[in-house]
Length: 308
Ligand SMILES: Nc1ncnc2c1ncn2[C@@H]1O[C@H](COP(=O)(O)OP(=O)(O)OP(=O)(O)O)[C@@H](O)[C@H]1O
Ligand SMILES: [Mg+2]
Image: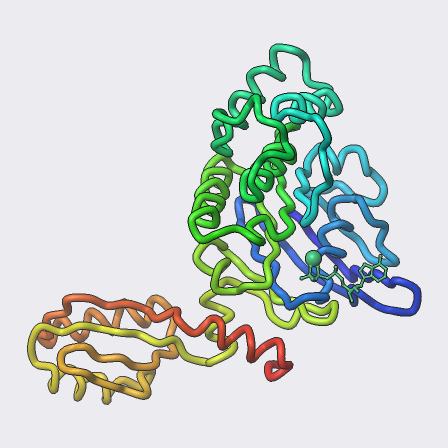
């Protein structure tokens, strides 16, 4: 678990991160979202021990990061938002260099390098010069580098920035694989919808403060109070609408032939009960889908300060 309490960073008189609280549970992919200059990179660098907080605490499991920098670094893999230039270094030499820093022995090093190159799909580029790689490949190499000491926590600063859609999908697949391997991942982005389908939880930061955090569902509910639902019925559309109108948690019913959309302000159990009631009244439900299409709007709404 990563726990952040009262975290503040000042650059001179400017407060970049302002009394931040965050908790990232084991096994999560936590999306850290905010507009440019919100304080994402500053926060991630503090968690990764590369920047000293002005005040506040960061715990990685029970390790107080400021007091045990070495131990914290062993648990964390950090992928920066920018990476340097690597004159005359080949992909394998580059990773070997970092494997040596991590203190891997020869056998472990060989095994680790093979596995990592396969994970990030760069096995075919092992002999290529790093500078000759495409941007997406460089980012994947950088991800491999952050994994070389087999850390449990990954802190990734906009790992998909500047990538084309196919490369983004590939990056997401790699992150899902890392989650399956048991890693806990904190990932930043300024695009909320991109993270929504990948992340278990999300925190939105603006001007150094968390404006809202929770699971995607929780955030949608906090913001709108209701979730949208779309159902498809095979018969009795009118009867279905009449039944929905009697439901206290249902609002804003809209129908288009046999597709009905409505707002729903209950939890998952309420939703299950609603489905049951419709089916018991002999409505043939062909599909029942919660709608998650308005994340961009939510992001715009909360980062304008419209939400308490
Ligand atoms: N070394 C520094 N000295 C002074 N101010 C800084 C420094 N680093 C960052 N800042 C300021 O702190 C604020 C937060 O910057 P940060 O890089 O953490 O934002 P970010 O959320 O990562 O933005 P982006 O989406 O553009 O990467 C910005 O206003 C930035 O100008
Ligand atoms: Mg940044």
